Image 1: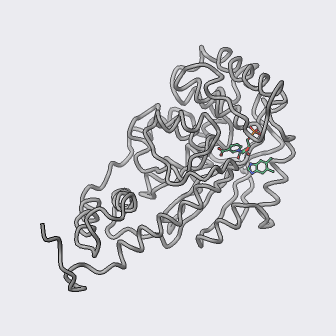
Image 2: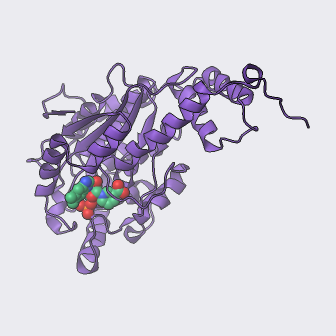
Length: 346
Ligand SMILES: O=C(O)c1ccc[n+]([C@@H]2O[C@H](COP(=O)([O-])O)[C@@H](O)[C@H]2O)c1
Ligand SMILES: Cc1cc2nc[nH]c2cc1C
């Protein structure tokens, strides 16, 4: 694992990102069909591997390869700080974002263990933690240039050789930003999208809900498209996730999303183009109430449902093991013909 310092990337504008969205490659139906045809020949009753069969078809379709493979999975964790955290909306101080980055580097976090367990390559991308975004209850969190730069930064997580990308985030206060993103993108009321995050309750939860409502109200006139929602109430690590998802699509790398904040960032792309997340699965369901609501809207069924509400890519990384199992069956099983097993009689 190698941490990466934030460096000035060539300035981009959100218009360049919007243009990219119009160039996304579609599914490779030939590879997907090849996976379905092979599944039918394997020594099992038709459909008996359930969702594993769908996942293999999905992988083949979006890697544009049959058989699909997972030899070099990567978990990319983006870390950012949020001005809105100063409103007392998290159970933890903002210093924890940088402290946890140190913990990731030292190998002491949950995601380090989960990534090692799936033989993954963990990368941590620290994004100017000493320069939090503006408090979005007072105006836009980011300028156009800063949002575009953060998206471009996230694109670096997709490098040659990576064949599956799990995404995660670390950012004290980002469940407030994620709730504001969801409210800005999909409407409803602030309380529909706000939950405990790291464990806020009582007065702090009231403050958090008010911050989300206020942030969206203040920035509403600027929220003319999903990228403006990201710019005005999102954050660096959330924008980077958007960039990583776009770059993965362009490089034909399937993506595994994590919990609430990660999925909320991804939902910016869904709101901009209904097909933009077709190369993504959601690794797990977080108990953060906004996550289930969001999964319903984007039409994704999570792979795991283990009550994990950690973030940092932990659930997405764990789900890599399920995807590996699906690929192992698909590539390693014998066909009825090879194993001389009789097929279905009626
Ligand atoms: O992934 C989730 O669903 C999730 C749910 C609750 C908390 N988190 C993590 O906790 C942090 C955000 O919580 P908060 O209370 O500081 O907004 C951030 O670092 C997330 O990775 C993550
Ligand atoms: C300790 C801690 C670890 C985390 N990992 C991801 N988000 C986190 C938030 C906190 C507070």
